[in-house]
Length: 152
Image (cartoon, rainbow, N blue to C red; front, side, top):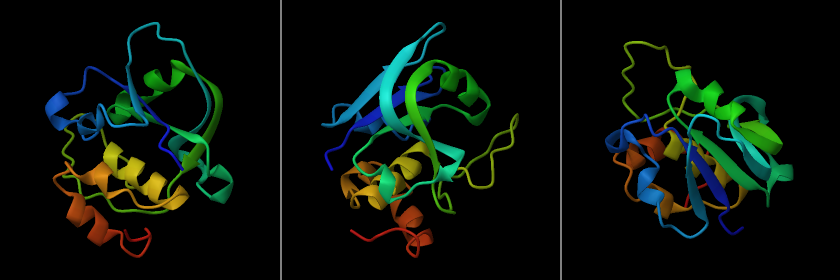
């Protein structure tokens, strides 16, 4: 599967903390900055969503949509995209990202955006280690989830 990844990014998030920005310029990865009033038709895509059905073989060959924001702003980004969206959750995986929110409680199954993207691609096609090349906690993430993700 060629990468077909669309990332809608909340520009209010710190670029220094964004796990996806190192993917800018990678073939098959496109970024769109969210802004007030954005109305973006994304076509048919798998939307990574912890409330959706579990991702599976029927999702192969469909582009991915990642909404990259804090959990508390996620609904706002979601309202700005339209299309044939297939909300899909990942199996139970453990984040390696050291989360520390003082104003919002992250969900127990919440992953860093790069972790979720890597896992989805690995489950739908094959592991793509290049996605984690600049992720500081990559080795820890892979070790914690070795039983649930195919190895490279």
